Figure 1 (cartoon, helix red, strand yellow):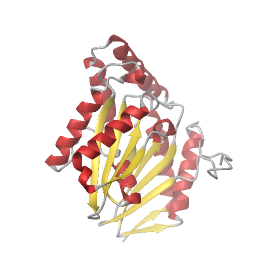
Figure 2 (figure 1 turned 180 degrees about the vertical axis):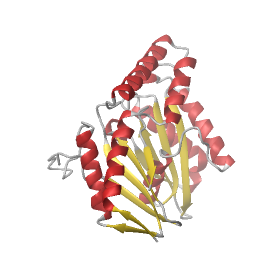
Figure 3 (figure 1 turned 120 degrees about the vertical axis):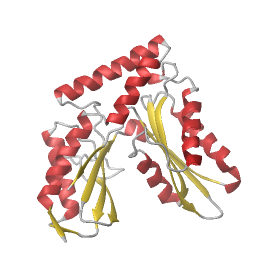
Figure 4 (figure 1 turned 60 degrees about the horizontal axis):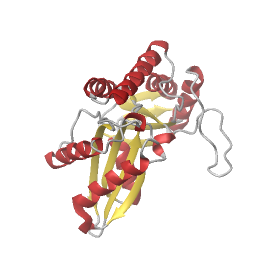
Length: 279
């Protein structure tokens, strides 16, 4: 049995909040760099260059890449042989509170969805915990801005809609979003499960590096087909046209009921942030 103290969790989460908000993951940065070099439309290429310059300056100065530093979505893989000394969830909230204060990150969370009073410290975080074998605790902080989150959609399709129905829904979501989520976008697509599970799958898909294809060749091919189709829409960076509407698309699936075909699309902008640490 391994003991992890709550204070260590708090410190780790605080640093991950700052890291995620000031440095893009290597896979996202590499995709942005590649697309700005390959984009043939001059206005789109210039826009991508500006996004690249902003990313580099943010990293050098340890400043937020985007002014919307997001809701702190915290994903934890907790080993079954780990004992947490202290209040686990409060340790995460305390880490978010400290990270957003130390990093001078914008606080965007309101305590009630209708009465809209800001909590002042970007808590509470959205926490998802999975128990896994072993004696480690892996924490991923993925701040999610709502300019893109608001463009996300979920549908309960009929089984007869099949793959074509899923593809049509994903493309419709992108077209309806247009320039609103600050493209180039990154998409997480969930297929299967239940109404609540499919939304989680779409969010989980954004945690996978976009240069890693699905382990099932069928879904890997579907990811690539959808990515090509989205980039053929011509929306382009910030909606200015071109061939770079989407940097990457990942699909996660789960078994579902014989009578259903749930599908969810979690839209993210090019500032798709995540940082991970293992305790």
